[in-house]
Image (cartoon, rainbow, N blue to C red; front, side):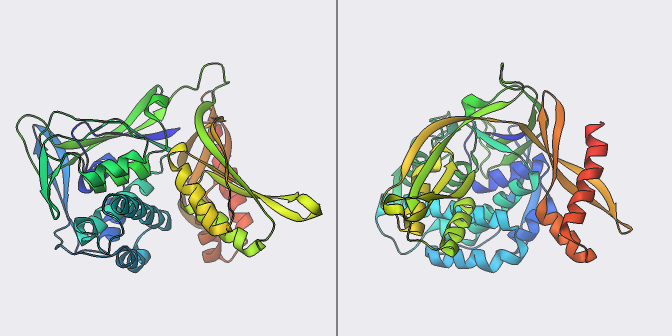
Length: 400
C-alpha cells in the first residue's frame, strides 16, 4: 500500500504542506495551474531552514474577508483548473474551518485571514498536490503547536489559537507543544491535515521510503528548522497472521427509510462519498406493516462519523442514525501503477490500481474515469478500453 506520512515536528501551515508535497514529487504543473485559478501564478523557490533544503511557495496574494458562500463561489470559479476530487476535498476543508469558527465565535458573517486568496490558493494547492501523488492512505504524526501568544485580526490570542484547537478537537489527531515560541500550526494547516488523515499513527507499520519532501515556513529561526516533512512510502508487510492483509478501523452508520425517492437516495450516496465516506450503499428491506424501504449504510473513519451522521440526517430526513463504532476490517495493500497501453494506434500511460497480498499482485483494475475519457476520444465502448488496459496490466505487472 502506498502511504503518505506527515511529520509536523515544527508545526504546519498551508504553504508548508503544499511545499512538502511538491518536494515529494507532486505534479508541479497541475498544482500551479490549480492555484493560478485563484491567484497570479505563485512563486516556488528552494530555500534553507537551519541547513535543511526545503520548498517555499508564495502566493503573493492580498488580504480579503469573505463569507463561506463567497469562498465556495471562488472554489466553483476555479473548478475548470482543479481536479474534481481535489476541489471536493478543498470544500470539505473550508467546511471544517467554518464549523470551528461557529464553535469559537458563534454564527459569523466573514472569514478573516482564512478567507483571503492566499489561504484559498494554499488549500486548493495542497489538495491538488495530494491528489496527484495517488496515495492510498495518509498518516499524520503528532503536530507541534507552539506556545506563548500571537496576534491576529481578533487581537492577541493564546497558542494554540482557539480556532486551531477547535479544528483539532474534532480530528482525532495528536498534538504536542513543541519547542518553538509562537504559532507553529495555523488553522489552515490543522484543517488540511485533519482532512487528509485516514490512518492512525498507531497503525503505521514497516514501510519502505520512496521519497521525502520538506515544505518551508516563512520564519527562519536559528534554533530549529521551520519546515514540515512529508514522506511517500510503500508498506512492505501485512499484519501478522492475516495472510498478508492490513487492518484498520471504521464506523458503520445505518438508518432505515421508507419515504425517500430513488433519485434522492442516489444523490445522498454521492454526497456521502464526496464527504469522505469509505463506502455507501442502499439495501432494499421490508419494514413494519409490510412497507418497502431501504437500509442506508455508510462506512467512514471514526474521526468523521459525527459529521457524516449529521449529513445523513439532513440529506435523508431521518430522525435517527445507528452507529456501530470501531469495526475492524482487513484490507489488501493497494498501489497505483502507471502502465503503457496502445489502443487504435495511440499509445498512452494510464493508471492501474493493483491489489497485493504477500508481495504478489492478485488484482488489477483500470481507473474508470481515465478509461472513459480515452474511450470517448477513440469513439469505442468503454468496456473495450477497460478490458485492454487490464489485460496489458496483468501481462506486465503480474509477471513482473
